[in-house]
Amino acid sequence: METDTLRLSTTDIINGMCDWVRVIDKDDNILFANRAMSQELGNNLVGKKCYRSLGKCIPCENCISRKAVFEGATHIKEEVVGDRYFSVLCSPVRNQHGEIFAVVEVFRDITETRKLQKQILLQNQKMKRDLESAKVLQTKLLPSRFKHSQVNFSYIYKPCESLGGDFLDIFTIDDDHIGVYIADVSGHGLTASMLTVYLYATINKEILSPAAALDELFHDYAGSGFEDHYITVFYAIYNTKNHSITYSNAGHSVCPIVYGNNRLEILRSSGIPISLWADKPHYTDLCMTLLPGDRLFLYTDGITEVWDKENHQFSEEKLINMLLKENASSKETLDQILQSIYDFSGNHENDSFCDDITMAILEVL
Image 1 (cartoon, rainbow, N blue to C red):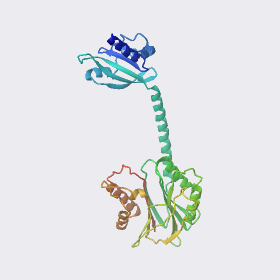
Image 2 (spheres, rainbow, N blue to C red; image 1 turned 60 degrees about the vertical axis):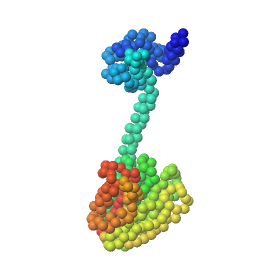
Image 3 (cartoon, rainbow, N blue to C red; image 1 turned 180 degrees about the horizontal axis):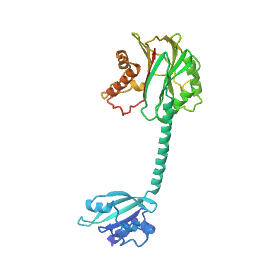
Image 4 (cartoon, rainbow, N blue to C red; image 1 turned 120 degrees about the vertical axis):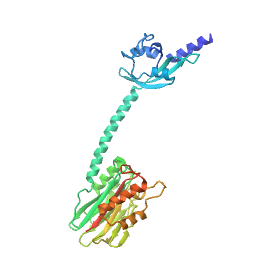
């Protein structure tokens, strides 16, 4: 009597499940189907071949029931029934002697999950296309064709993701002045790349004071809507007539280096990043002379924050030593520094770094 009550309780439980449950013998015959499955597929399931109850004429190519019988282990797969998707869990059923005589299959409806996954996939594909478009735009804004009779400009730009937060630009202001800046936006990805576009479009390329241009940029940024981000910028203007360079720094932590003609100078200067951190940034113009043969090396902190396997950092000192040693063209020097970074970190050419790698050389001819 107690055994019958237990059996009745078990059947009631299985029939109360929303999942479909069926038991199949070793010859693919259905021995039992719970109420949920019978209501969906018909009340005459018992005695049918398992595959015919799902609208198929032949056994499934990937039959997990047979695998469960043969291996004595639980298997799982997806099954399509009509326009619905199910996750099917199949487990062997043993008799009192431990012999497998049937399997129990539990069908869980995952149709809504699959629809959601499809929507996410479509959204991801759209986002990928948008990122590719943004990458093309960002790349086109880089100074690929700058030429001038009195200076040579070379650079390397390698974002750690498809879109980077580093940016640089060089442009002619008038007959006697060339502007050049390098910037680093906090973060990476689409938002950071949008900020580089904002910087390119907003920075004043007409006034001859880098400090004034940065001050104007700082106050314009207050209405940009990017309150969670900031931009560091080093901006310099080279006077081709008197060979002076005027520069100002908006929080760019790695300072440009002037080398050549048996001299080395690090252009250390301070200033608050382009951000919402203060009301008055107080940028300052500093000046120095660049003679033919001098080179201005600009870079971002993605270089000095590269680490090797022994937790050593690619430091400013190592970078300076490389610049002083190299007796090569600007482009060759940049290539050699990049290769040194790969060698130092143990990365390969196609590997990515934790931060963007950007550097440039302005050489006075």
